[in-house]
Amino acid sequence: MKDYASAPYRIKMVEPIRQNTRAEREKLLEEAGHNPFALRSEDIYIDLLTDSGTGTMSQNQWGAMMQGDEAYAGSRSFFRLERTVLDITGYKYFIPAHQGRGAEQVALPYFVKKKGMAFISNMHFDTTRAHVELAGARAIDCITPEGLDTETPHPFKGNFDNEKLTRLIEEKGEDNIAGIILTVTNNSAGGQPVSLENMKETKRIADHYRIPIIIDGARYAENAFFIKQREKGHSKRDLKDIAREMFALGDLFLMSAKKDGLVNMGGIITIKESEALFEHCRTSIVPLEGFPTYGGMSGRDMEATAVGLSEALDEEYLEHRTDQVRYLGDKLIEAGVPIQTPTGGHAVFVDCAAFAPHIPYDAFPAQSVVNQLYLESGVRAVEIGSFLMGRDPDTKENLKSPFEFMRLTIPRRTYTYRHLDHVAEGVKAVYAKRDTLKGYTFAYEPPVLRHFTARLEPL
Ligand code: F0G
Image (cartoon, rainbow, N blue to C red; front, side, top):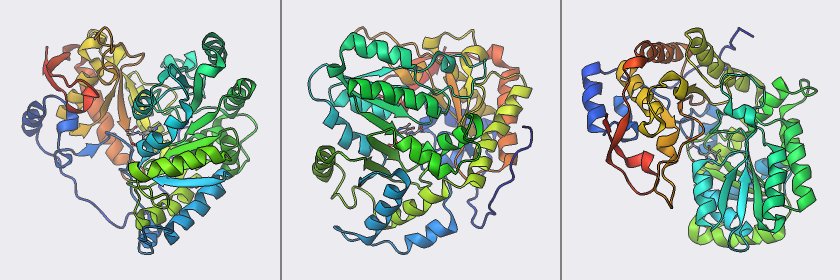
């Protein structure tokens, strides 16, 4: 597995990007309070902050946008997207939302029937966690131990720890579990996939205790591709078929279409069969997101999403997509840089606890690596570690994240392998001076979601 797939597309529209000087970047980062979220996109050469809404649309998507029906109610574009979503999932009901978190805020409160309930997930994404908590429930992560060990390869590091899941349900009582959230791929653990076998076991447990399963499937197509590549017995199957089998295990599918929907904005709520849940969502969505046939999306966006959802299941596309990630990962491994292995679907996750072990977690080692990477190369990455994790709401202590990751997130169909060489060279330059990296303290710390707006000072 050394060869990397060539791009199954050519580029017919370009967006200029510019490399500024190191002196300029030093000034800009200082002004940004050492927090790249405060940088302007114009001041970045290669932007690997996120793969969310940052990808490139195809000519078929742009073409479809011209057919957007902008009716407030009963838009033709709604019905087109509905057809596509129900066909991919095999579910009964569909409602659009403006993006993934919009879908979460509408659907998740339905499951919280009383005080003190919890959702259990292989790993909650931060907005999912926030909406669980806003709905008055607790969010518990339950990832397989292999996922926490970055050095030892395992094909499905995103898996649920099903034994622990059973233990948690027994301890808390099944009536206190609002739902099981299956995040595919498991973003925060490294874009790591979940195997079908593991999902089926989770489903068996959920059925036994009569707990609903919610699939947080922002990157479900990438997950299906890894099942085909890595799980025994699936190598000859059609991806759509594998995806259908995944969806059959859930009761509700929430999706940020900004990832595997290949659009810049959009979200999806899809319900397998529960009429009560559908009624809840159809009512709640009106004041929160919009009328149920647009839910925050314009007609043209729904058209582009319908096309994007189909394109994202194309195998040649997925092979190239995941090979870009693997390519960057291999370059870093060759240079001795510690990363989560094997690489997952959407990003290379650099293990900064191992990269800069002299920086304690509450001085944010991964933030230090992210910032130095910007200075060296004009590349923007993002911290997924204790800086993002925040503080314990009761004790106000800095929480210690199980990982200190720098995420190099690759937008879909946007950069070339040569761009990724530039990223690898930048990371190598930081690695060469890793002993000189310094941690951070706060100059300003907002009370919630601090990583977006905090200002930092080097120690
Ligand atoms: N679920 C997962 C697994 C996600 O990764 C995200 C977003 C969401 C839900 C929320 O979707 O952004 O459309 O509201 N992840 C982005 C990221 C922001 O950078 O990983 P959204």
